[in-house]
Length: 274
Length: 266
Image (cartoon, rainbow over all chains, first blue to last red; front, side, top):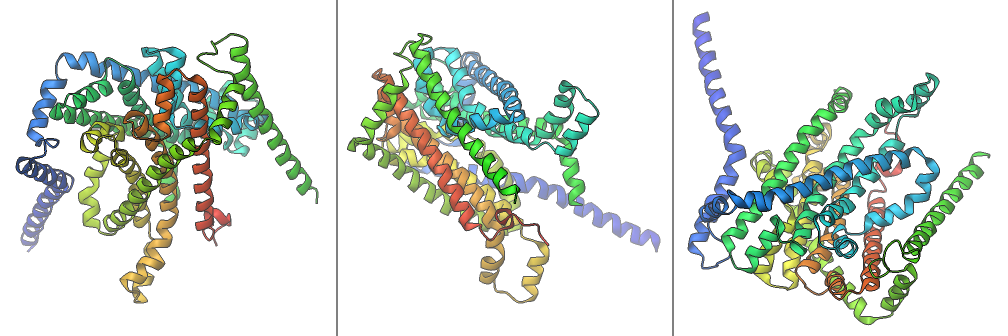
């Protein structure tokens, strides 16, 4: 009797595990595969030159980006992006902390910052080009000048929102200024800061591409615009694909970092919800 | 009685400091070229830029360009919002679709919309449609993701209550799903409006369809620094206006919502 029910239980469990694995593979991969196949079918039937089939794009991707182009175009782009993002994070958090902690400074600068933030970032490219000429520094400065605003304003808000009871407790325990900054103010502001960094990343990627399309002789943006002007359609698609991969990579990397930095915060929220 | 004057005093102080800050910003800008820190050819005097700004305001061609940019913005934002609301509601309400599209959405969303500029140019040349492709792609995701979150956020108890009271599908949509989704939708709409403006101007700069963005690029290549800075100031004011208008709409539409009323839930 017990053996009988036991056997049924295992077979049932075996089937559900199998179907669950199938479902967990089918759900994420089903639609993309379907669309790729559909694209391939449409591309082979249509006469339009602008939509090559996925295999041609994959081939172009391999031929274009794996090899010297990776060193000449992809790495410089990523280096500028990295420098720009790092610069805006450091400057944004530093300035944001100072402004957020000083009330008169905050009230003094608020309208100016609101205005500067409202300027569409790509508009800054011609301005920085005028000021610095067409150099690598210019591209990094462009990225910083666009990506710094979400971080700066979120840091100001986050620092300002530090729990007043905790601030007063730290004061009465005579915690030094640096310790207070490091153990109270910055952790309290970190959820807002990370939200700012997430916005900054997508702005930075856009600015990297456009600044290269505008004024460059290397880099991803330049390459893609070059392919388009010369009607190298499959190569152009492979560039779009690569940019997409960079975007996805950034999103995934940010997700990992955020989960680490804000582990305590998500923990608290989980507890509160339960 | 004492609270009121101090609060008013504080608001007054804030406004005064804001004006001082703005004036200080303009003075510093004026001083940098005056002291010769940066050549006025590259950073023109504030007075020159403001003079150019007023010149533009009485110029009909300027308003035509502004109109062109804002038309692209409005069409793009409308199409993206309608598509995102319809698709987002359907996908959000059907668990099967939500699971099936999840990877696709996570894959497509981070692709920077400017990567599609070359494709848009090939398909449409330097017409407005090319700009619209990019505007719609970028602003679609902002609204779509928010609508999916919003639709999924419907309170389980409220849903069960609606079902046991025998509300029809249509009634459930208008009395249950819509009120829950509206705050999310308004957030998405505000973000999308800002993103659409950025991409409308970017598209004009890179693609060259008529509008403010092309004018910026033209004044840069002509070396007309005051004109360039005046247009940058215009785009900043435009961004500010879009932000303020959508914040106002958000407050108006959500006036019944707890986050706007500022009351504690019972």
